[in-house]
Image (cartoon, rainbow, N blue to C red; front, side, top):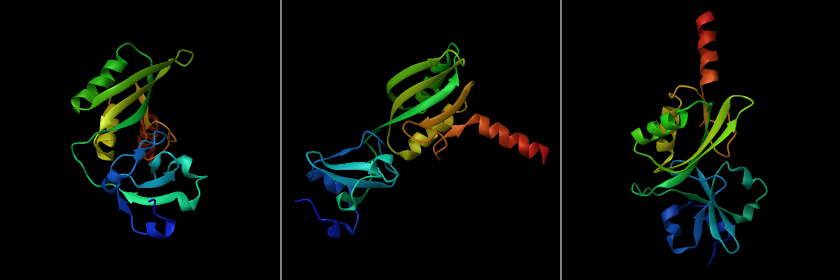
Length: 178
């Protein structure tokens, strides 16, 4: 039996959903460490989204179910990131080396060249245990030469999980002139 909205006052731990049909939303790929919400869906059970997922804007309130993570250190989750970089030989290898240095597995990698701009977007799906792992790997990737920006797929490029070298250089120049 799916609880009514009134019974949802107390958040349910994600592990408590084990007996119920549930899955993680592919649109936002929530990770432990992020605020999440469950959406009661016909035929799919509970679909778990990040609390700030853009797909929640039109969902009726009575279908929303507050939930939170219960830790499982051995479980991994897929997270997609995008890396904007200069298009040069070896940049993908350099990025993959950073990921491997962190002992993170790569599930998928695709390169979209922007030949007219001399740049590329590298779309990478990694397996991480939580938001901390994802932030750590994104930060590490920004240290690769010719990487311009790293952000989580499906998010605004200026979100709090975005790392942009251009913005850092502008901030440094401003602080030097002051």
